[in-house]
Length: 124
Image (tube, rainbow, N blue to C red):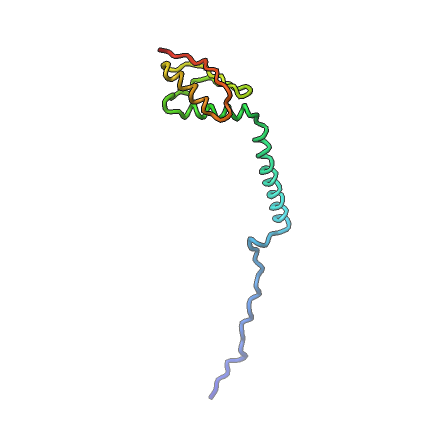
């Protein structure tokens, strides 16, 4: 004898909830992203302008200092350097005459240097 279990209940499918994904931003998120993009653009656009504000003498000063500090023979950063119209003046003290000449040689190799005024003194 067939048994009756009563009415058959089928599960109703769950209502799918809406999920936000990274690709779907709220209006305020979109606005924030837009503002960020504009700021990033302005910073990137201003960077070359800031670099152009430096004079050729300032750029040359930076190059000369880098060359002197990185030179293995000189091993000093106790030199005074100034640049005006591509004329580099160097002062200070080094151990010997050989290093004094080395300072001038290193500075002359820097691109754009027209003249070197070597006021460096040798201790020995």
